Length: 360
Ligand code: IPM
Ligand code: MN
Image 1 (cartoon, rainbow, N blue to C red):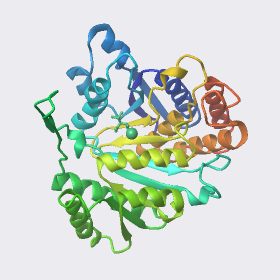
Image 2: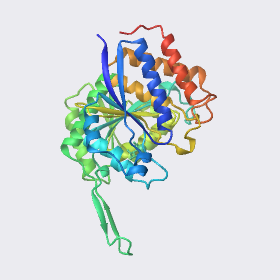
Image 3: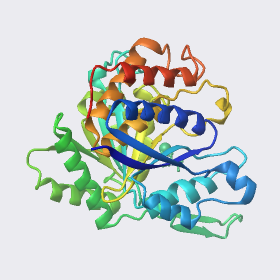
Image 4: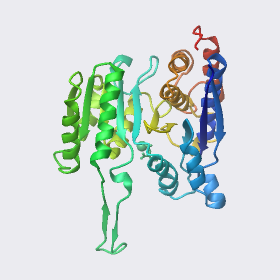
């Protein structure tokens, strides 16, 4: 039977629309090859829209997004809009309102890609970060007292609920079990200083771990983990962590897997919808030049297929991505790829067409 999916597309700002177009090109090639169909519906959210008429994320749009099978996002962020407005009112609002409580960020070095880590090979850099995505300092709690005076006080609160921590940790254990690689889950926190929030994470982690005797567990303070991600990334299989630490360590993850040109992520509500995105941002200086690398967006599309349970199509797309990275791209950096944005997408589509697999 033909599987059909409703996909919301939010191209967004800067180079977002250019990379999203290539992601859609890949999905359309998949659709021609496999028994799967996508109905794309585009939403003009982002900085341009906001500057034009003040629209950020209207409630009715949010309701529509809720009913979609998945959301494909380019980038949100505009140089003419003060930092914080678009990010909190569009991106974070989607994460909160749709309860996309897992931010899944694979760190995978593909063959043929250069990593800044000396002597590290693809088999050494292959892990995944499960980042809590709706709590911690991202909830925006806090405030100023005596703002702008010498006695000013700024408070930024970190909210960690038992329910929020537990569902994230459970997801990570399940993910680690299904991934079935090293069956090793590392908790990243800072319980030598954050004696309340990290204590909760550690207690819940230890408790849930009893239900998963087949998973080996470890604990690392976030600062040490940053160091080990550089020195011995091969020790990691799955890492679970809170929102802020997850944000920081996944930028290290992005650079060791070859940079923002390739790094993708999924914002997932396991019981609802999910949003997939390249994690590199809007890169306005490259906008409209056909030089941005679309591979992160194409990888996000690949994660989306996996999430939708389309195993074979996901595999075919992954093989195509690997081929382009190995055979065609000189570099992952914008303007240095040896070809334009659209050509990269064309090659991915070509490898999909030529794929020997005939997927159902
Ligand atoms: C990310 C980004 C966002 C975050 C910003 C844009 C709000 O850095 O997705 O990692 O901090 O989560
Ligand atoms: Mn980030």
